Length: 357
Ligand SMILES: Nc1ncnc2c1ncn2[C@@H]1O[C@H](COP(=O)(O)OP(=O)(O)OP(=O)(O)O)[C@@H](O)[C@H]1O
Ligand SMILES: [Mg+2]
Image 1: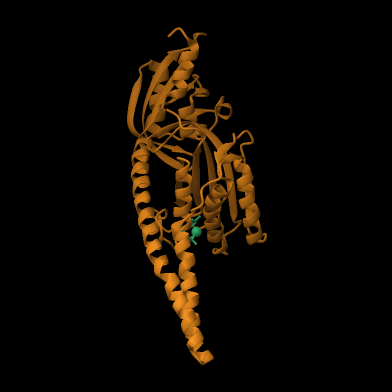
Image 2: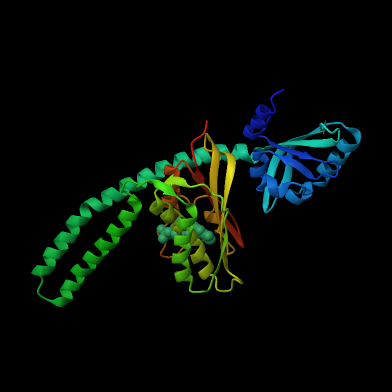
């Protein structure tokens, strides 16, 4: 290929992660798909040894050395790699390449199997999520319709009743009707039309942090790990704040309900990710917000279902918070994912900047 810009664009648009190492197995290049797979930026990764960004099994480490010595390429299927705290399953290809200066370089191409599984799972999740949301909205409407009548009748009845003791009963009906109405309103979710404007995500996270700090009253440490170059988004700021607050509020509750937790910490981390697929859509740039807490983690029995409405692990919880967040983020063609083990729960919000090809 004679046009180096075309070659570069091709590499930047590949969904396969491409890494280039020198003979000491230090990184000299990685494409955006590799940046997102390894959760590290190009500038940070350059010069690092390969095993600093991912842990490979001994078999693969030996095979890499062999390729360097013999020059024979090799392929490995369903290899298990560890990236930070994540285990990923990948197919990968390793071959030798000569650079223009004739120095030998190792070319590693990685195709994540998890990613393919993830895309399929996300599509299924979004579809079933929408179906359940619709069901819940339908139920909420049905609950709300007769409530006005019940409340009104109880008020009329209360006027007819002579004794204060009897009026206590009508008061119970009125209060319970009000409680049910508030619940039905939450089940219906945000109903006003969004007011779109250019939004800086950090302004939203700062609003949420201000609210949470007041609630935590010094019992939790809040950490900000912001990417200051994050571009602005076209969105409704109040809705984004609501979506983030529901997630971070859960994290804070989990921390506060575990008083034995040492150094309870809630971290907000923002990054921009290039070439990211959500559902069936590929996006050129996606903003990622990770909300991490070191609390007890999501109970295992709930892990697969927390985004469904009415699923709650808390006494007094309505189980609507996360489903409302997912609904809001979905409106912007984004997605929320969650990974949780005891001591580390991460909710990641992905928001595309623009819809790509
Ligand atoms: N960071 C977290 N750590 C531990 N458990 C969590 C965390 N986030 C969510 N959960 C679990 O997921 C459940 C569902 O959360 P969701 O916000 O949808 O509902 P809720 O908090 O129970 O009720 P609501 O938000 O409607 O008041 C929670 O009840 C809790 O068990
Ligand atoms: Mg909640």
